[in-house]
Image (cartoon, rainbow, N blue to C red; front, side, top):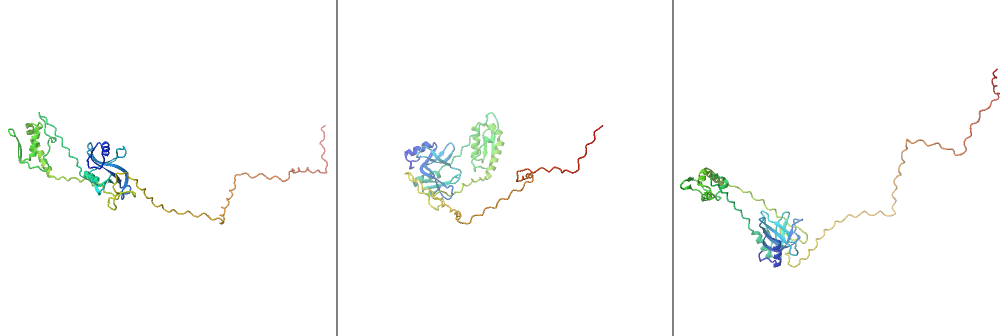
Length: 336
């Protein structure tokens, strides 16, 4: 870790303990986000040692934040993607495009900010891995294939005027690129015999002709996609300014304990509509609802029983039949 950092020795030890990666630099700072409002910066509550490191196992660079007040270790990190751009909006405020919004760093001092910006913007790209050497050919025989032939330096190919093989002089050529001669010498160093080279001379010539035609073809590489558009930050009243420069970001944090930001102002409450006034006493009473009509007569009900008379005395029996003045008939005569 560079000695120019304003971190103390104990703080540097915390960073080394939390980061097994190669630490290029580490300085105190804060992390801001342009979220949820993309036009304002908002403090994310993250403060500690901002470290720029490289993970050798992944071959990637990382921006990480290490906790200096506790034992949480790495509390935030962001991997540098292809086409990553790092902007110095203010001497003490930097920003870059994150995965979902713009992210900003506020440093404790301009010296730390300058050191951090230099390390990030002058990072070295990954080296192109070397091509593995071709497999050795069988000394007793076999054929030469394209996997054993690696072309000459790009752009240095020359027209082949003559290529041949002489039993006394070995391989002979005229007006051939030196890299091809080195390649043929490399075949011999890999164990390819002169007889095998002579046997496959036509194949070697054809391969070189194909390489010549390939060199004449211009390959247009596809440009990488542009980095995500820079968005502008967000936040409440304690946020830093946006990256457009409309207002300055928050001042750099001091090394002393930082007071809590003031609470965000509450938005004005909308005026609610007043309820209707209660009815005044003494007003005429509300008329009662009309009486419910009687239910319809049931047709299947038997008629009511006859009413009994008011008097409890039963009616007299009917009179006996009237007697006549004629005498009753005589009885019939007795039998003899």
